Image 1 (cartoon, rainbow, N blue to C red):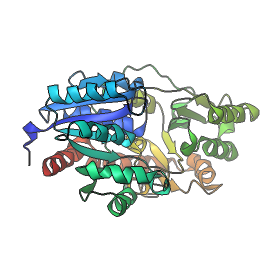
Image 2 (image 1 turned 180 degrees about the horizontal axis):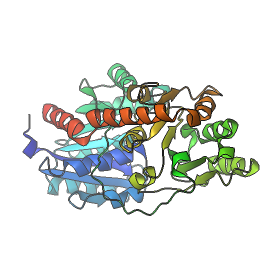
Image 3 (image 1 turned 180 degrees about the vertical axis):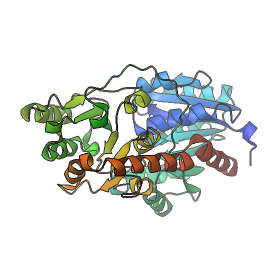
Length: 363
């Protein structure tokens, strides 16, 4: 077992686009800098907007990997580990593949794999590769209980633990995004424009609730991939003439500033692991309308600290939207309850101590 001061860990991630796994990799690297002797972050394939959120005290490197097995990138990472005396690769999501390749040429390094994928259980055909590679993991961290159960049943390591996501409130932001509409009638959705995030369902529910005719506005914050999914959303907005009520902002880094301008936060994904978005909503004191999938139902207690709905029920979200204007006192109370709950359970201080204990136990 290592002492904390001897733990030298690099977070490994395939891209720095804004996403759940990517955000947690950066957040963990940032908060560990003053708690262990070395905190690094290595991006293998693609840099992105999150690069600007990496603390200067984090030892960051980009490998510029061009193909699945990139020998140049592999030996660059091997050299990084040797030079910085790294004893653990904390591999997030799909980066486990590159981490194991590295272990083949540097057997002494340990691998902790961190699974963030909410629909892992349903991906039966692609998991055989992961099962084999798990032979080389020293441990596995998962973000919800369903993933923990799956990992125990399927992976070739016994060192499996649940580690909740957390939100680091100590972040430097440049306020540059300003929302349209009235603050008390703004609903924000933090989610990249992609299939599981269910934006069209939110749009249909918003339109059916008639809130757009009462001065309410809907704000989508997340990367626009300019694909068919995105075009369907834009066409729906145009065809239903709600351009003055629905706004798309693309990727934004000033999340705290954005949420301070809103009163409600919605998340309607058809699957999730543990969305940091709910924690961000809670810290911003928003009234939350959340999907019931993944770990969401462990954070949101219906009618106590938020609203919970089944994203596969056609009118579930519409009914909640419709009731919002008549429930101001209740909404305010639930927002306060959620704010208290996330401060008590999902701050960096609480979760990072658990992570450090895990490192110590298995390194």
